[in-house]
Image (cartoon, rainbow, N blue to C red; front, side, top):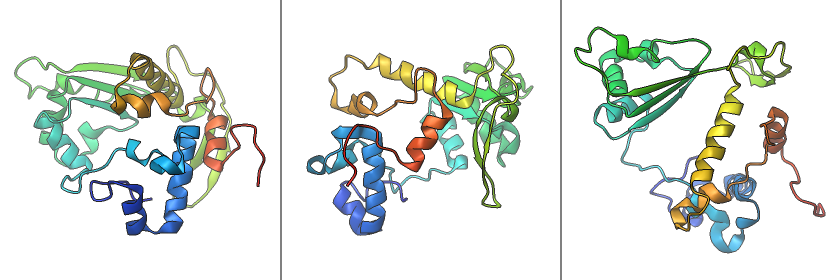
Length: 224
């Protein structure tokens, strides 16, 4: 689906641009995200979705330029190594060095996690870097897809070592901790965080995520 943008500030605008068939998918997504808060009377909480600016390039390269310019202050990097893979190495390193906080989730220390050791930096880098040990593909269950259009389910072979955790577990805890920070907020801008449906269990379960993707009845009600 096309992401909402500043050119489509309302659900009606988005539907006129993308068609009623796609709008049904979007409304389903909004209901899954916000539950009973998403009603026809409030455009199914469409206002709560972030809107991309049509005047900003959101590509990975432009993202690192924005970091270098001080427009992005924090980055959570999961399973990627931009210090090696990005084409413009100089801008990438400048961007990382200009962050307040860099969180790297990976199975080992990557060049991105240790970018501050690069000899080109003549002075200390102020970026705080957190390296969170992740579980490998053998250490977590879940489904995978690839370019051959296969969908496969895999079971965990061995438990993650030490403090390593699955990416789902890490993201689950990040969201829960962030929501807790806003628990007593009455600011309308915090409503999307406080009202989001996040019911994957005390310890997030990949099966529960898969059920939501496939579609499920999340409350007792008649199916019509």
